[in-house]
Length: 292
Image (tube, rainbow, N blue to C red; front, side):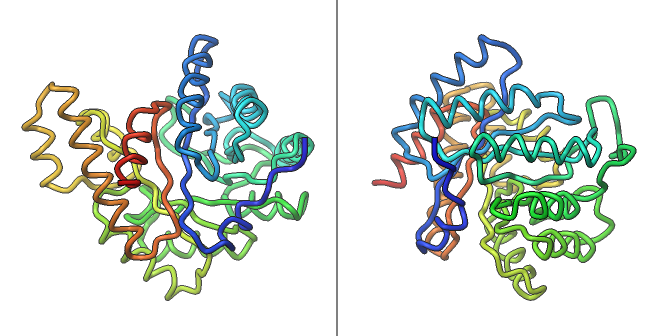
């Protein structure tokens, strides 16, 4: 099987890219469900997909299995995630070698969240402290890897200030990151201001907006509380009015995301990345809406 094409080559085509994020299931039944989702999403023809990585490598083997499955069975260009949490430098080098040997050429490079039950990130002995260090390690190990990094339009929850957060992002790009994918947001003005600040800081790589179609008010409130994103009052009002009507809530979420994506593309965003929670319906509905 030939090596994957670097995502940076796709950006060079000067067209909006579509990408999706999968997370590794906990058991074999979940893998079967993911396979069904991946089958359905082939109709969307995403330019690439990513596969998340559990804190401390808790889903490391599943990440590897799902990445191989999506690449071999479905022909997707796959971008596995890799984090610093719970790994020594030597372990990260070995994982990088394994990723490269399996012909993956794109990696989402993250510091990672604290393991379940922990309240703060702890540096592993002989490990790495920042995503910028992981970017540098991967590029030194395999220069042909194309690396994505995360960006926070509304600031990382642990950053002392927006300026400090932007400085961390610039270090990741300076270390060799080829593009940025943002954390989810629900107000496009937040993304546009973030891009302006990045450009003013000398960050010139593509910045892909990350979009999550709302499927549950409680769920999205939990996600936004963890990542520091805000929910517009108008969206909350609509979701509260829908109450427990699941179909209505999902329709509101898709409508909101569709409006976001249309505006983002009209304003020249380099594409969009969908956080789909391993569900095909919202992504396919969005693709159909955008094709209309």
